[in-house]
Image: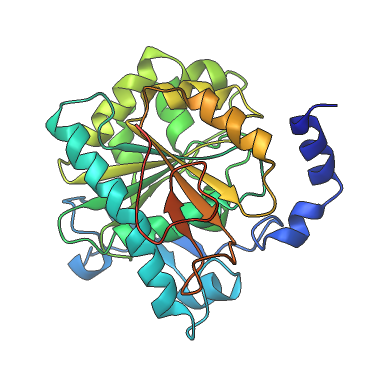
Length: 303
């Protein structure tokens, strides 16, 4: 039995649910609100005109374990500043070089339960605080749309709808939130041809639309696990850079190596070490290149 098969068997025995608070299906921490008069303070500063937005309950977000308690909040925020800085620098480098997908960051993991969704949420919240960018989180984990469920938008039209219907303007499906600088694109309605849709030329058009309509926008694409889905291969191809979330003491080394090989040598790749108790006594996460004995407190990248 391969290392991946062993890991899957372990996950099926429910070890993941005990290892990470987001493994069990949580209650939504957000809901779609409709207002007759759109007020600027409830919409992100990205020029969106909408009467619908996602209201995020911060207390429920904290209670569900998606953000730290107040006693850890400052140190947690500092760690995410260290994580996001090299990602933002890579966006600038790729944009200057006019690289394909320059402002598209793929959030990935080798296997389920590594903390990818948790990391995506907190990275998005941290990046949304930047003055010069806005953040769009796209739920591309279409088989298991955790982001959509967490924020209460799983019944909204989204990515798959735009891919299936060429007449739809995908930007019209983007939902602002009441967190300034943050918006969401739900996964959309389930489709048996999801893999083909994500690998289609229409996907390129959708991504181009999402990035071209707002020059300040960075798109965080929440991906299915790299080693367990065919959809993730199509997503890796269009991303400008990949952020791979690895659970300390949980993700098998071979699985990490296979995921890195899956991404390939020509794609900028950063690693986030989740739930590490080593080296980073001041926080939860490290951002470094694969092969380090322990995560560095600074920022490094491959490629």
